[in-house]
Length: 180
Image: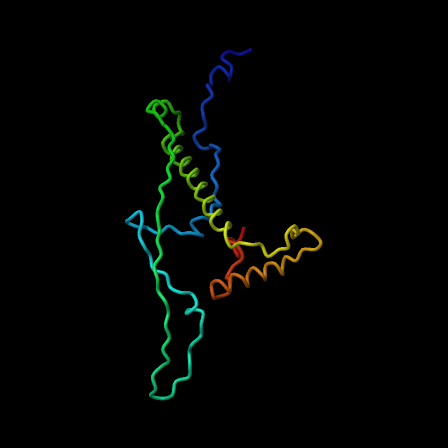
């Protein structure tokens, strides 16, 4: 056998152009409740009554006459920002001893950020679906069953949304109309 062998002249090292990890790219909490920068942990914000914006009070006006007056209501509501936190210990030794291409601080930051995003996603899901939500589908009948009515359920849902927001929903789901 020739000396040295290929195995003797090579020491395995980590690849620097590939690694495998996971992050959830499908979190939707920012779309459901976009971030609104605030300066105080608690404060108030204005709300406008929905009913006035749904009414059609326009009227024909005679030449020279004043336009019909319409009104809307305004009120205030409160907010409170609760701080959530999570940490991942990265020691100087971890940083100093990490082989390329590892970057322990960056990886720890991405990991913790994903964990916080996951917690906020759960909070938003619980908030959105805990009160006032009901499926338009008959309980126990899934769309893949014989007695299901997917189109009817979608239409019922769209009508419910239109009634709440005063206009037809533009899309069905967050990726409707987007190429896969």
